[in-house]
Length: 168
Image (tube, rainbow, N blue to C red; front, side):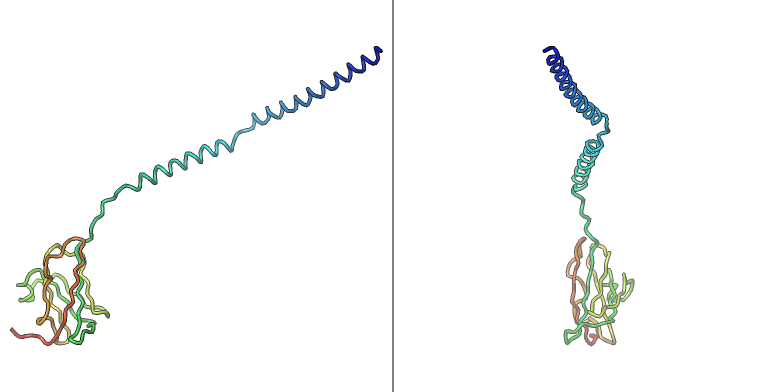
């Protein structure tokens, strides 16, 4: 009977030892896991920080910006008496009616493109006068000035018909 008791104590001891050994392994595993560097959470913290900063900066950059209106522009379309566009007509721009009549102090001269248009850009806010001519034809019998002063941010468009000049 003592043998049986001793054997049962021994087997009980072995079972407990095996359980402790298994527990020791799980403790070791847990300790090893705790000792390993936590790269994923650190990366996630950094990623979250970068995401928040990006969001804040994008919201901050979406502030109202002041819109700067472009300088006044004058587009002159030159047509014939048959209403066809005139390519290569000379369009001369003047500040005053007197400059136009005397043909002195022109601001600028452009030639019309294939569509019969000339575009004057970066102008001042004012009323403009213009003279258009090609092959002996001019605009003396038609429009020779903008109706009103051209304002900043405005593109003023004028259609001018050229014909045989009128003698004054």
